[in-house]
Length: 527
Image 1 (cartoon, rainbow, N blue to C red):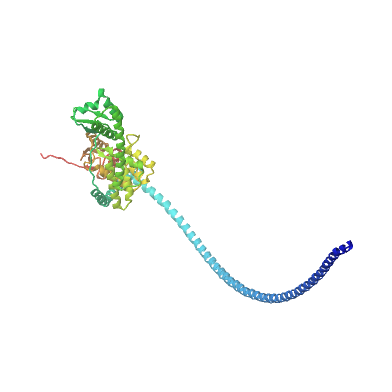
Image 2: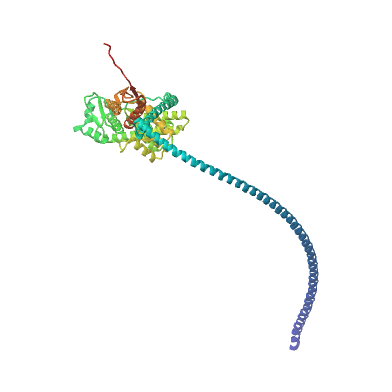
């Protein structure tokens, strides 16, 4: 086969393929153009239909809007007409009301004019009467001056002298009436209050009874034998010196058989010394080192007892919520005495009495018990701090955030401060009852005599007192007055003055009765 045939065989298929491709493209382009034209015609048809529909809808909406507009305008015209009718009616009513008000104002003006005319007439009459009264007054003054001159001439007294005599007579009459009223009011007050007070106090005392243990400033420690005294003293007295130095208590070792006396005014230190000495006696080993060890143990034991006694006091009285330090101070009162009376027992009894009286009167029982229990809390540390037990107790109560009524009860239970609540008065009464009960406290002969002498001295310091006798262990003072200097009416005032001075200058348990006696004696002899 020649090369030309080979070339033709190769080119003919290629040319045929190219022609076929060209023909396909031409036919595809024609078909695409025909489809585009068809779609364009369809879109124009749809658009024309939509435009026609839109015109139709707009036309219908326009017609509906015109109809609504006409309806709205018609309704608005009707509303305006209705409002106009109502407004005209309201204006008419207001005009009528204004006319009526105008007529009333005119009538009032006419009435006021008439009243003003009447007032002017009355003022003229009053002025005339004032002028007439002034003339009468001047005449009366002249007549009084003439009468006064005539009275002074007839009586021989000046105006001032007569005035002084008259005032003196009035003063005497008023004084007599005042004393009579005072007696009447006092009798009524005593009658009404005495029965209630007796009932409340008697009920409280019946419900509360406590044993009293007389405490002293010394403690006695029994010994198994007299040989123990030498061991307590030790070589050259070193044991007894060590014990006295560590406890601050004096040991008295005398001829008393099988006993050692501990003397000291600090009750807690005395208790520590007693316990330590008893432990040493039981142990048998007595030397300075052992003494120091036993004293430390005794201190811890006493602290434990103090805490326990304070808690027992709160449980016994039913007073809860006290500060732990207050409870500890209450326990210290176990070793504190007042005239031989245990202050802790006294505080518990005051708490009970105050609570019972508060219940009788319908007051706060818990608050009364609380105030009664802590009223003497200052005595727990009064030998360690400056000031009276009242001042110290009030400061401690303030420090530990106690109630204001409790603080006032502490301050006022001896009358140093005026009580501000009934609770304070109840604590004051309960304290007096507990302290004044027979056998509750003991007094030294010296203080007893001083109290009697002070009572008689206060009574004798008043003018008109002739003799004074303090009787019934100082619980009553009888006063004889001079009849020429003190009248029956004056006796009431004099007794009150003496009572006030006794209250302000003396301290005493319970109460003191003041009895005034005025006696007139006429003595003659038959011959």
